[in-house]
Image (cartoon, rainbow, N blue to C red; front, side, top):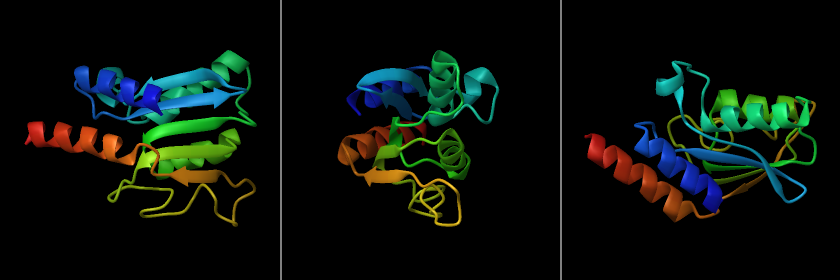
Length: 142
């Protein structure tokens, strides 16, 4: 999660909302990213999607079985769906997203019994640090 926080800070330096994500499998980081929809001109360039794309490319497979995704912020509905499609085993996130959260706050997509794959979810890891980073960013913007 500390690596995800460092990535989020990098995104902030680039003028993006500070969210970072890392995919880990067998103790190795295989994908990472930070929010970059502004720079990439891509509405899907959320930190989680960027990290999943890098991990899939590295492994040569869109299925990321036995992997954990660490994110500083609760994934949105789009990202939660991508976690299920990628067969991520576990999601660890820091702060809840009370406006758009697709895992706990607004929806419960990643571990829904209605889907063919459920992601194990751990929340609140370094939560105060993740929350403070976002609060400070938005306070400066306003």
